[in-house]
Length: 370
Image (cartoon, rainbow, N blue to C red; front, side, top):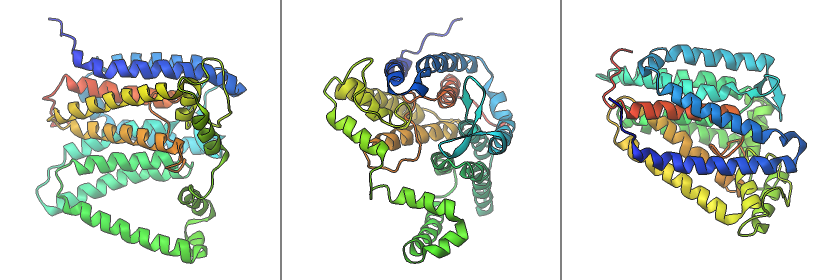
């Protein structure tokens, strides 16, 4: 017997297709912006085709196997993060990509998926009966999260570290551990931050000796993002401020914005197609966000841990990228989901969605087999 199509999914796919269409138009305009963006359109089309294909394939896979072997996926991601530090290509000061001739692969993106899968398995299969069980679970989650975070820190990729912490934090928040643990963790974090900022403002030489020059100046760059406007943000603000209601149009670029197809895709979209288009894009994201949130609240099984981790990073990337484009958040290399250029990111998000939509059909899935 054939399953009936769930028409509620249109609330997800119609806005997504609209975002995809605008992304293609942006990539077409990107080739006018710089020579190294000449192939962005064809590559973005390929990523989307592969993404939809992967999502379809996942819908045919037994999800029990995915979670059963989540540790292997996690371990594979860790190995790739180590290898990229040795053999990876350095781009913009970060050694985070494997150059595979026709395209690049970023292991830190794959680690987001494998981390969410493995932490979901760990939390879902932990029976909380005593305080000791809670403590051990928190230590496990922190250890599993810190390993990829440290490796990505060496690349360096600040944005990916924040994403990993969001995944771990969102899963723990929705777990069965008592909320007093979050108060304890918050207090410990605040103490460390107070100590850090005390030395940062009063005796920075001590910090430089402890954490190294590279990390210190990376932190300084993040904390001082409002003190000055770099070329990226300056040109982005000029593009936004000078854009008409409908933008400059197809095949025309009024001002050069560094990293326009990725980090500064919002400013680039406004420059190209005006304020009306970015308003429609924000509306599309809002519809997707509401769909995800409503679906999450209708989910009653252990899969909710994986679901909430995706919602956390999906919402955060929207928030960070949009505010980053107007100078209200530091520039940390966070793309806007599905609109920004990036093959690995698009494919990983489609994998997330494939698993989410698969679980939507299997509401009574149990994790007892893991």
